[in-house]
Each structure stands twice: as C-alpha cells, then as structure tokens.
Image (cartoon, rainbow, N blue to C red; front, side, top):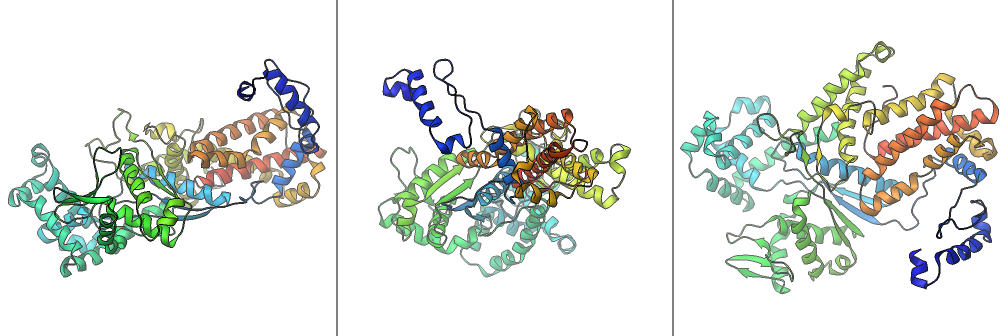
Length: 561
C-alpha cells in the first residue's frame, strides 16, 4: 500500500499485478501455494505449501545448524563488554553488560561472523590508588596471607568510605571514622598514589603487579560460573603507553586544544569538550578509549566495534566516536570505514523501583546474587519425589547451578535492553511463563519423549534427511509448530539488526508454547507410520532448536529437571 501511494495507483490494482507475477514464477510456486487474489483494500496472503514446509523440516532435522545457513559475507566484529574495575568486587550492575555482550557474541558467531571479544578491564585507575593507600596505612598481613582477595576487597571498601562517605556513614563505621580523622587528606593522597603508579614508581608498580593476578583470579572465577570466556582481556594498563601519543596527535591535527590547563577535543554541536588530559597531566577514560579504538582498527581491522555499556555513557561515546572518525591517525582509513556502535541498556531495579541494593543500602555483590539464585533453584529442583528419583546429590547441585544462574541471565536477556527492569527471584524462577526454568523444563520434556520411547535420535534424523517424504504435515498443529521451529535463522537476523537478545527469548517462549499445544493435543509415541515419524521429527527438531537457542543466550540446559 505505501508503494501504491508512491506509484499513484490503486493498491488492489498493484496487488493484482504482483500476484500475477508471483504465480508465474516457478521459484515461488515451488514453495508457496498459488495466490487467489487480493484481500480487502490490497492485502496479499501467502501460504507455504505443506510439502515445501515438510521438506524444510526434513532438511533442518539433518542439519547440525538447524537450517541456519552461514552468511555469504561475514564481517569482523569486536565486542567490548563487562569491563569491571579489577580492584572492586563485581556487583549486580555488571550483570547486564556481561550477559548481553556474551549472548550477542554467541549469536553473531553462530551466524557466521568473525567475532573478537575483549574485556577492557579497569586495571589502572583510582581504585588501585585506594588499594595502594590502604595497603600502606591499614592492611592486615595475616588476613592477606589467608585470603588475599578478601583483604584487598576490604581495603578498597574501607578507603572508599574514608574518601567518599558522608559524616553519618562514617559515624556508623568506627574503623573508617578513626582512619578519616587520622588522615583528613586521604582523598588527595589516594590520587597521589595513583599518579605515582602511572609515573612508574617502583614500589607502587611492584605492588600493582602483585595484586593484579589476585584480582584477576577472583574475576575469572565468577566468569567461570557464568560460562563466559573472552578472546582477549586488554585492560587500560595495556594502552597506557599510547596515551601521550593520542593527545599529541589530536593536538597536531587541530582537533584538541588547551582550555584552563586541560586538553580537550572541541566538537561541533557539543556544548562541552571531550577532555583527554586533565590540568594535572592525568589522562581520562576518553583518552584510553580513543587509543583502544585506534589500536583495534590497526591490529584487528574490524568492520564493527560494539560497546555494550549502560545508557548513562551515551554522550561519552557520541563524543569519542565523533573524535575517532575525525582523527587522522595511522588507522584513519580503517576508522573511516568502520561502524562504531554503543549498545546501551537500562538499570536493574529493586522491587521498590530504585536501583537494586541490599537492605543495608549497599550495591548487591554479583557472586552473592548468583549464590542466592542457585540456593533458591535448589529448593525448586528438590521439590517432589519425582524430582529426587534418578538424581544424586552432585546432579541436583549441577541442575540447581544451571537453573539458578540461567534464571538470572534469562530474566535480564528477556527484557528490552533499553529499559530498566525490576529484579525478582520469585518471578524469574517460576516454572511457568517466560522464564529460563520454564524453557529448560520444556527442553527436558521434549527430549524426554525420545528417552521414553527408546528412540535413536541420530538414526531418526538420518532417516528423515535421506527421505523428506517421511515427513507429512496433516494436522494444523503440526503445521503451526513446523512454521515456528523453522524461524531460527530469521529470528537471529532480527536480533543482529538491533542487537536485542529479547527478540530471541520471545520467540523461544512462543516456540515452547506451540510445542506444548501440539504435544497436549496429539499422540507422538502412540502414533503410527508416517504420522509417528513426522511427530517424532518435529519433537526432536523442537528440542534441539530450544536447546540451541538457550545456549546462544549462554544458558545451560540440564538433561533432567
């Protein structure tokens, strides 16, 4: 209809011409039934032929990629996500960047792109100055010897409170209050410790090199629980030697100039400059981000770089991207052709509608969040005698880990990433509705059919792939399920078009629902002949597709629930 308006013809007249062309096309009629005529003001209804749909099911059954063809023109895509500060405990605020980035990396890689993931750690900033200052003024050697990670975390939290806390907060912590009274210039001294580290001070550098493996080990342990791996972990310290050159380059090109002792990039349309060096000589996040973009362009030559960072950094990335595109550095040609994308996301809220915190008002630690999710899942996994039969304690623990962590991931990924969402364990662990537990249970239920019937699933796939006529779609519910299960490739394309994993979660939920309607109404194992083969093939393909979809979201699927 929009086309008819542009061509200044009646929509029905245009529809009739389109229908005539389609009905004369052998490629079209091999897949679709002949179109009878336009409907209403000019709608064209198209119906897939039953035999073509059956062939599609048979082909997907015999394909390890479930009918998803690799891209003809794959791109090199760099994903920058998670990026915690290594001297701080990871908290709930890191969950969104981490799981959205991981899901997108898996999906883009499955589609056929060359994906490079990089965890751009904050390993060189003020947080290390806090730990260095704390180490020199209030460390507990015995505690450090027993658990280095815990002691460094204690030092960071204590010094942050001394530097940033309000009087009423200090009053509630006698240790911090005493330390603040003894060191009224603690904030300035922390900055000096940070500056000494950046300037190559031997003592601070040695301590940094000692602390880094401890901090990295703690972060890696949490990533292992989340089933997340990175191709590279190039933190801020990796790019530190390049920062002087970035500032000099930008000044020489005329993009940057001095303002009140600092150096900033002044961009058209921006009220404030993008600062790249402070008046005291310290560099900023923008300086490191520009050095990182240039290095990636030169060494990895990507077609796209995706930054999965919360929406509060939108202006920062607008300025950084605009500067990078105008910058005449060695990688200028590559930068000009490269797409830079900020994939923004909203905030995790508590049930009070405010940013998710503990009852004491502290930010919720990420590991504590995972522990609680697993603990709650264990109670669900252990419910009912049927759940305990056939599973030993180790299996129940593994299932609880998969269900609990899967619930947290899925609850995040099923939201439109640009909106805030309310975090609720009770809702995310329900065995009904659009939750990971429901989806995991659906996979176990589907795949349990083959187990109960003693079906050799691989032999079934080979049989159907070798003889597509073995699949015959007769019942409307068979047809509805077939149409849905074959949409995986289109859904993944839609996810990539706007970088929204919730498009995949919504389709998986719809697929699980259409299978439930199919299974509740039609016998599978008790069916006979071609009907039995068809329904077993649909069940097998649905189970594999649901499993693949959840795995693309980074969610483990236990064989039993």
